[in-house]
Image (cartoon, rainbow over all chains, first blue to last red; front, side, top):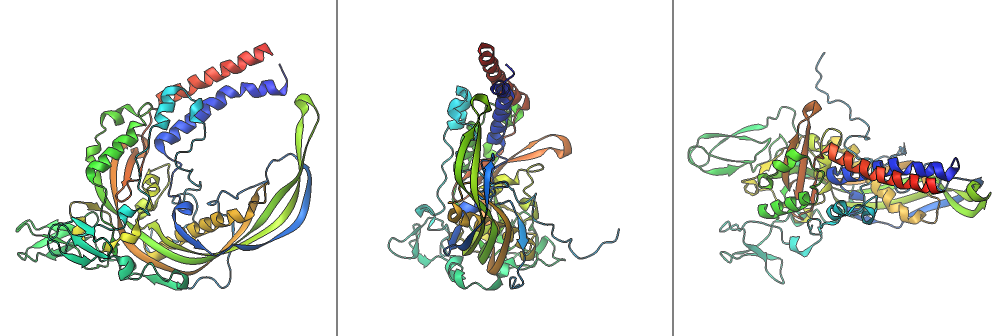
Length: 89
Length: 435
């Protein structure tokens, strides 16, 4: 009973309780909602340009995603580069 | 403590006013509702109030009053750009600001900051209370522009409104009249709360009177912009996946190629709405439920009509207290988010994800228009520490999109969660006992 899978099963109860509480709380209070301007604004974008350069190879990692993956977290701001030719005010 | 006239510097745009999470797709749940007990599942799957798509045909006409007889029985004359009054048969061209001020065109050529007259900076000494001489009888009548734009003269019953633009920011460039009627809004709120009954606060349910909903015109800045965004980071592509060990010790390993990724996108945005009231723009979910009102955006702002205070008769309104420069960090934040969403498709080959590390924004031009947008608001004050919490249920006055915050009865919700947790734990123990 001390193997890995057994201990994992014990977490099922607390995890299920917390998950259900969190989901129902959000369903009633809608604290996670806001204006989805990324989807709901009329945006007219020119084709995306860019560069891709291979810089490294990783062997035998156990992580399923890149560390700090934020490709879908549009609203998480990262380091801001300020260009000299900044906007006309 | 000395008082200075300079406003405090605008704090960096994180936390309050900018929910950091991208909202989930409508109707999506983190747990599959089919796995939940039946009463909970029924609540979750009950239909939502129907919202009209902002691009819908029904909204193309834009409510306006007949200039001849004042009736609102106005339809678009089929096959033409004319509006026709069904009451007196008068025909005229609707004064939509979109065409009148040329707001829809030239997004590609935007340069610098163009501010419409109603969106100009608020003068520091401008008062909210304004006194007018009644045009009917000459009496002095006061209008508190904090919450109303029309008043009735208490002597001669003549109704008049604040039509000329004043320096206190109360008069916008345009107004989007209510399209959703009150009974319709009440029905939507009833439906919305109807599917959130089981764990709702008892007092909330007892005092629930959606007929008390009020129509409010809330101040927004509608922004068009042209910008370029540059993002840089690292992406990984999986090249090999293998497992080592056997049985319980089995572990999966991955090999990946790491790429330096850079993306550039030029884009224009059309009619991005920003809250121009500092109170409404504070979206800190710990202290208020303004995110509810934020969620029912956007509006079909293309149909806004030129400002006329008579649209506000019978409705409440709130005054703008933020200027263009104060809203600029907010705009830049949203432009960056939009750009990150735009480039997502172009990095889909990085199946292990991309970590953006740097981003740069170049705003070429913006155009700001102040607008009053119609919202039906139902509120419930939940008592508690720090003055409690004001829960809103809001209905978009044009599209009917409904969103709300229903206070929960904590002990009920906890009991339900613990019950489900206990059952799951029981199953887990049963499996362990048998193994």
